[in-house]
Structures are given as structure tokens and as C-alpha cells.
Amino acid sequence: MTRSIDKLIYTASTLTTGGREGHGASSDGALQVPLSLPGSGGKGTNPEQLFAVGYSACFMGAMRRAGTPVGLRVPEDTSIEAQVSLGTAADGGFVLGVRLTVHLPGLTDEQKWTLVHGAHQLCPYSLAIRNNIDVDFAVA
Image (cartoon, rainbow, N blue to C red; front, side, top):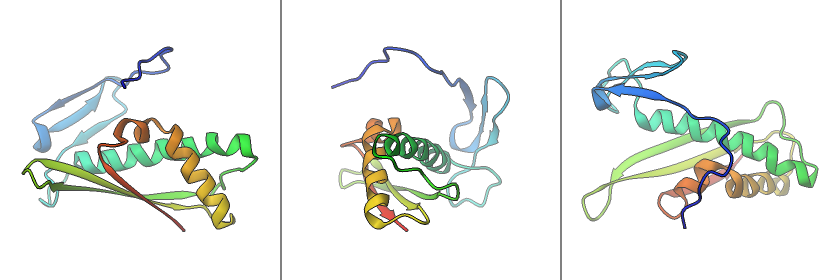
């Protein structure tokens, strides 16, 4: 089932040239990023790194929202290590895999998992990739 936007909050607009060995820029000029192939040693980033940063940032916001109704605050020194892996599938096509390691100092394991599971139900990235990309979570 496709979910549609009911109320628009924000639209990001970018222009990419040259693909994985090119350049990406946002329409407002805030993002100017050279791109390089993963593992090439080039001076740019790659789509997997950009996805990892975007997903982890969004996920942290979703944890804050998930904690509100149950009275849990996300600690100020929370961090998320995101790993986005690029590989091939049995059919020869390309596939991504994600592992998020969430560091929530000062919380019990139960509280940590409450935030992580709640965020996974709310985060737009989680919703967009659900049932399409393997996502693995760990808490620290």
C-alpha cells in the first residue's frame, strides 16, 4: 500500500551530475558534495554514506517522538552508528542492507528497545524501506 502526503512539511531539491563519480548539490546551496565510487579512494562521498547519515538522523528524531507518549527522553549524548552495505542478490541485482547501532547512555535495555522499536514504526526512512531492505538494530 502506497502512503500519500496529506500535508507537505518540506521538499528537498538537489541536482546530481556524473552519477557515482560526479557531484551533488542542494538547490539552496547548503549541500555541495563530490561523489566517488565506494572503496575507490576518491575524495568524495557515496550514496551509501549519504543514506546512512540521512537514515540515522531521521531515526534519532523518530526516537524522540516515540519516547514522548511513554515519558522517555532521548539522552543528549545519544548517537547512532549506521552501516549501509551494498551487495548483490542471488538474481544478480544490487541490494542494500542496513545496521543501526543505537547508543542511548543512561537508559535500561528495556527503555532503549522501547525507543528503537517505537522509532522504527514512525521513521519515514524505516517506513520507506520496510519489507524491501534488511534492517538490523543493536543497542549499546
